[in-house]
Image 1 (tube, rainbow, N blue to C red):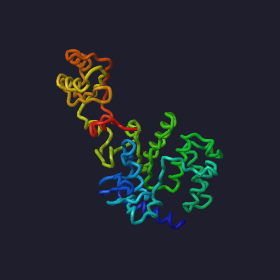
Image 2: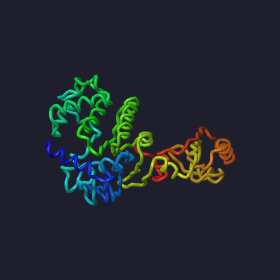
Image 3: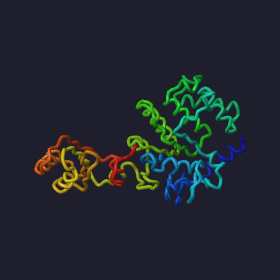
Image 4: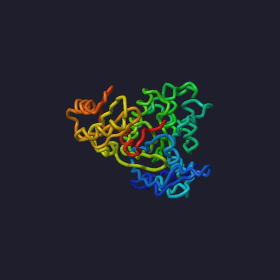
Length: 330
């Protein structure tokens, strides 16, 4: 095992700046012939945090499954850390760290033992395994819980421990599948800080999420996915600017909302798009000056009584809606 780790180190140092490359990658599940991922073309640069953003069922988890050799692709090609995932899955496993949605920590071991024995499984000597485990406890703020059983730590601590464990063998690429699902706000922010630190150290990270704020906060670039397809790839700022609006106006009013949407798009200067979203109407507008009185006046002249009105800058959710015409699903 120790020899394998040395080989992995040599390969990781020899890889190019491209950490992940997908070419027409696809997956069709035999049961029901479901197309989970369709012709995915994607490149992730070394050292960046890249996010797959989309609702549940969009194909994010299947994509990560294929890149980590847990799911066999139906078509296409996937290269991770310079290695063909399908051709050499065992070697790829040595070159990546993976943190799944579920808590897969060994409940028969303490927090420290989860780290130590994982390091030993990767061929480290006893002294090195102790050293890296102690260092990981400090880095991931788990020192006080070193002797605790897994059942006695919080969900946030468990997720930090999973990430710490996945990084012990210094993998070039770290995969995080919905890393903050189920965590309280404090734990989520603490995890964001740690991921930011890892990013500053040059760690390549691919994460999946359906949290807009998480993708906006963490990711250098991200891809918006739905129904197995990538709809757009860009920086968070670039995606938000693609909406083509400076402001998103949200209006609530009784009556025919489809008619209200058409009315406001026609009468509001700078309006580029309007649509009904649930029980509201949203209007994309270029410019921000005097919007509130303009919207109220236009609606009242059209016979509508506005009950609520808000203005905000475009968000990633607005981007998603602009591409799909619907809100994110739970």
